[in-house]
Image 1: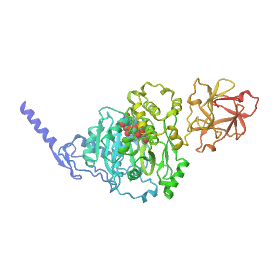
Image 2: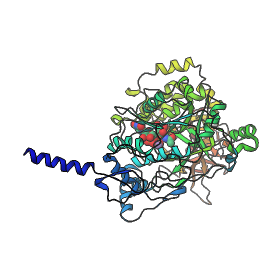
Image 3: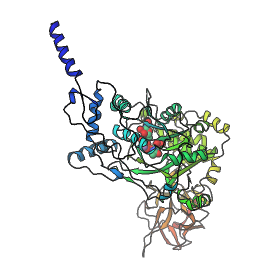
Image 4: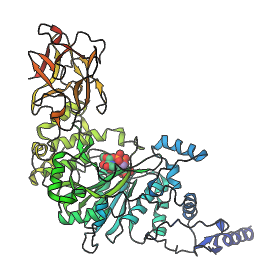
Length: 590
Ligand code: UD2
Ligand code: MN
């Protein structure tokens, strides 16, 4: 028996230790895949600086096979310049299937080269800017991930090495927020060790999932660069996107910067922009959600004064930021309170940081010569810790610290959060606000975001609008505010609720947060009241008067009348009649 075992062993080690050298790469090839055709890693551009280092050990790791299969699957040139790619046949079916599961076409991602290009979408004026990397601060790029598709994450790393490369990149820190996907473990480590420039990329593994806020904090703690640049794990940059950020921070260390965030389509990976001249900045809704808004006219004027003929590429003040992609001076990040480490999971940290930066003396700016694409997904491919609404809870923490009396408008929009048990204590953040001597939320609204509509400010009347005759109130019937919808009527709530919150402003506009009341153009009745997205300049919206309890539409001269109403969403105007009971309306606070 002993002889037999020994014989087997010798035979086995002969097979395993047999080492050949691959003719293409000069690297050792294990016997198991000696006969596979070797696929060189697609090298598309001369200036890619993450050259492939030879694999040092003679014995191959099982990861090599997997990595080589990955590379074999990639099609050089596919999706280059950020063009859309459509799969066909069985690949398409696989892509569609995984898309339904994780809101991203992982099949296609696996076919795109890690080094695919996305095109240069910058304003041509940017090309005139020259930066001397020797005098710029250095950057630590922090990329956090939780169960992201492996190929997408690796592409984000390659893209960063390729496009943030002018000598300013100190390091890339990947923070694994307790991922359970095995590919993101040993294989990722091995890939980094054997295929990427030495010492550039580090992985920090968190034992447990801590949520994206604490994951970013963990990354920031070990970073050594002058500037922290945070990225989501599914981003691809345009050439030279780091330098303009670093340059601006050198000029102004309390400026927190965001690139223009372009869209990488989650199903065909097309990189798309709104053209190089127009981009949006960050706003917010009273429900505590981030939204995109056009650069306000006021800000365009400021850019013109500040940057003259270069106004198109002038840093644009942004009332808030989306949260995932930004650059901040590393020391300033800590000085200004980093993050609220009691925020769990996902969400809310972006508005918290936005309000804090502005209220405590910093600025948030969009840097037009810095462009990075981000894969926007239709839903989260992951569950939230304990299935909690971490966005809501985190946002309530934010509101308690930063929004002063305006928190009432927030709770009006989110009554579910008012007494939520999981919000916890915010004393240490309130102390921080005191210590930094930060300004009030009303200062922020007046000076940084005067365009933001406040339902209780500069209004003639606001609150529930109730039919004097009956029990019904104006109600948006929970319509999507991005599109026009018919104004509705619904039983008045006991207390004021968001759907019944309306204002008649000093500009005589009848509105809620995002929509303004108009009357449908028509030759004959019914003349319906339609809510349309408000125009940026409030004065340009249609006007209404409130007099003797009547609501009179200026353009048609008619009054809102409950008489002809056929359904819940059928509020109409009719010729004014001062004796008519059905034309009388009571506004809660007038
Ligand atoms: C946006 C931000 C995102 C974050 C979020 C609010 C952009 C483009 N994205 O949502 O960065 O500010 O708003 O919180 O501005 N992740 C973890 N642990 C978790 C959950 C997520 O590490 O428990 C990672 C995830 O893998 C990703 C990043 O955090 O790399 C952001 O998550 P997302 O991409 O799902 O968020 P997104 O873009 O919808
Ligand atoms: Mn994201």
